[in-house]
Image 1 (cartoon, rainbow, N blue to C red):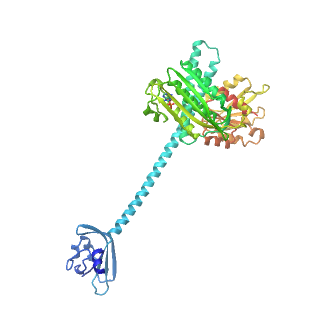
Image 2 (cartoon, rainbow, N blue to C red):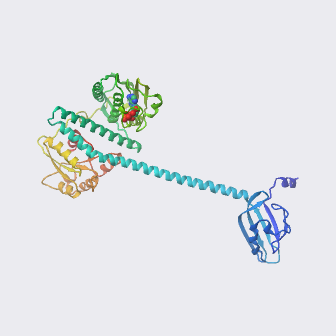
Image 3 (cartoon, rainbow, N blue to C red):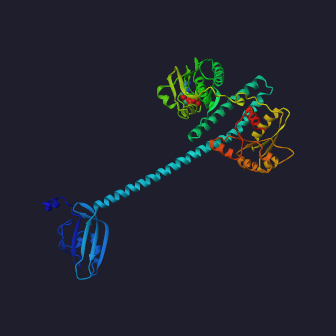
Length: 507
Ligand code: ADP
C-alpha cells in the first residue's frame, strides 16, 4: 500500500546512471529521463558532452551546479554529480532536480535585491528632498535678507522725507512711496513666514498682553480703511472679554489683519463686521471666538478648499491680485493653537471667516511697565557713543539720520574686526553700544562679537551688542546669544524700533 502511495505521490528528484568510459549509458533508472540505456549521454543534453573528458579511472567527485536541462516539455534546474573511481569501476552520474530550491532561492534574492534597491531609492529621494528644502529655505532667508537692506533705506527715508516741508502734491507722492514699500515689506515678511512654517521653525510665544487694547487698535485701523473704500464698518466686542490674556499678540494681530485686509479688499459695496465674543472662561483659559463677515464677492463652493494653499488666488479677477500667502499663514497660525479656521461663503454675496482661539487668562496676569508704556526716553544730560558695524551704505545713512535727529548720539562706523576692536579699546572715547550687522561682506558679526567678549578690560568686553539682521530664525537667535549678543533688531526697522532697542540696551 505504502509503495503504491509513494509511486503515486512521490515526485522523483534524483536519477542515477552508470556510464562507461565512452560516455554510453550502461544502467539508469527512469526517474527524470526515461529509456537512456545504451544511449550516449550527449543525447540527453549537449551539456553532458563537457563531462566526457572527465571520465577517467581516478577517484574524483565533480559537482556542476544550477544546470538547466529539458525534461519532456519543462525545464529543470539541477545539480549534476559525476563520481569516478580509481579501480576499474564504471563512473556514476547523478542528476539532482533542484528546480523548486533554485526558484525559491531566486525569488528570495530578487525580493531582497528589490527591497535593497527600493530603500536606496527612498534614501536618495529623501536626501534630494531634504537638500531641495534646505536650499529653498536658505535661498529665501538669504534673498529676503538682501531685500531688507534697500527696503530699510526706502522706509527710513520715506519717513524722514514725510517730516520735511512738502507741498500737497509731494505729500501725495510720499504717501504712495510709503504704502507701496510697506506692502513690499509685508510680502517679504509673509514669504519668510512661509519658509519658517515649511522648515518647522515657526513657534508661538505665550506672553501677557493687553487684548482689549489690541482689538481696539485693529478696529480703529480697519474702520478707517473700510470707510475710505465707502464701506460700513461695524464691530461687536463681548463685554465679558478679559483685558489681559497670555498668548502671542504679534501672531494674533497677523491672523486678524489678514482676515480684515481680505474682507476690505474683496468687498466693493456693503459692510464689514468684526465680532469677538467669549465662549467660555474656565481653568485659567479663555476660549475666544473671532469672526470677520463681509458682503463682498464671495467664493465659489468648489474653490473654498483651495484658498488656504500658498500662492493661490481663486477670484479670477486681476483687480484683486495678491501674493496668495495670507490665508496659508492664517491657517497655520490658527492650527498652532490647536484650533481651526472656518469659512462659509455665498458666491457674490459675501464671506464669513471664523475661529476659536484659547488664551491663558487669570487675574494674576500683568504687563511689565516697559511693555505697557513704551515711551522712549534717554538721559538728557548724556551723549551716547554708538558704534555701527555695517557695510551697507543705506543702513549707515538710515541709522545716521535717525540718531542725528535725536541730538544725543555720536555715531561711529566700522566694517572690519580690527577697526571694531580698536574702537572699543579706545579709552578716551568709550563705546556705549554696538549695532552689529551679522552678514558683513567679509566677516560675520557674531564672530566679531565673540572677540569683543574676550577683551581684557571688563567695561570694554561688557559693551551692549545689538545684532541688526534679517536672519532671525530660531537657530540664528541661538547662535547670536552664544556669541554674547544681547539683543536683535530685525531688518527692516523703523525709527521707533531702532531708538527703542537702543534705549532698552544702554547701560
Ligand atoms: P491674497 O489675498 O494675497 O490673494 P490670501 O491667501 O489672503 O491671498 O487669499 C487667497 C484667496 O482667497 C484670495 O486670492 C481670494 O481669491 C480668496 N479670498 C480670501 N478672502 C476672501 C474674501 N473675504 N472674499 C472673497 N474671496 C476671498
